[in-house]
Length: 215
Image (tube, rainbow, N blue to C red; front, side, top):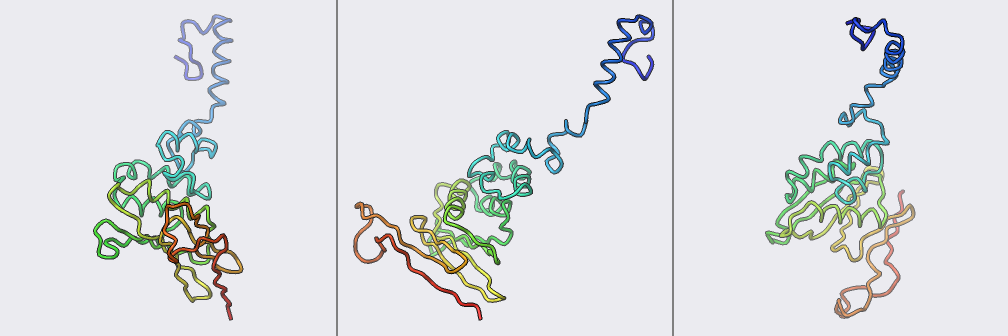
């Protein structure tokens, strides 16, 4: 068989088969084989990433929703198998957080001397988080932790010209929010019978404000 044809030598002289051979050869020559290697996550077309995330079951709060850029989307897909393998462990919680860009995430177990309580500490550097991003993080942590474990709080460490500031959200009902001008903590609880009206919570719609001046 000729290497330049898909036909056997015995039939290459037939005109209609020769024409078919030219069409097939042209089509094969135009194929970009690298685009068929969809499981090379680092090089696959970006348009394929959502479908791969669905295939590997990391859509939504399992990671893909929280990825802020294409590199993080690729990273969560690459870690999908091991994340599902160890789902229900604090290791999986930390790895999931790391895969979406929080490389310095730390998990502390046995908070308040309770075997089931754990704390997540995220070093933000000069990065900021809005309310929705914080709520998404809490939902992601809930997705990967086991049912027995309880997230006591989510802490953030901010840096200001080599100085640091730590914030703690003790629950997901009133997460902290930071903006360029200040940091707002708590507030926005509804008096609906779920919480006791005993002064421990702020039931008004306003927020406490901590102003930071950098000298």
